[in-house]
Length: 124
Image (cartoon, rainbow, N blue to C red; front, side):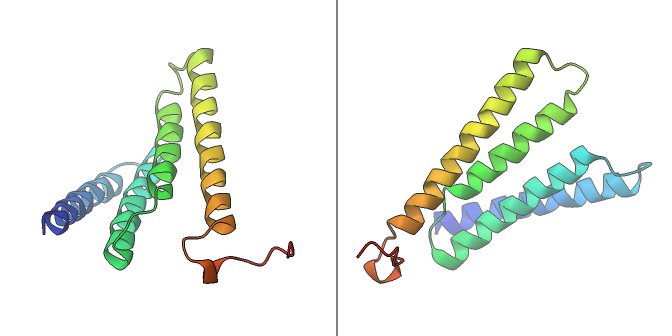
């Protein structure tokens, strides 16, 4: 029951934040890339909540995707103030997270939870 309440709070908070972002974009001169990335983050949170409600479990990939977009948004927001070290560290973090996602995807396809889902890789 506490999980559903938490998901409800997350869903309402994300809906309000997205509504505020849309309102801000509608009343401004235009839409920026940072606004679009923030909207993408909100959509990923919605997808994460939906996945949890459908399957009863949460894939670790969703927070990793959110972190990649969040780092990219930070780099764009601080475009004028970024140092070379910050850019290299941010790029390295994105690459490490992307490699982690690839390893997780490989592990899920190669070693699925149930034997009947395992793909035949021709090694038999």
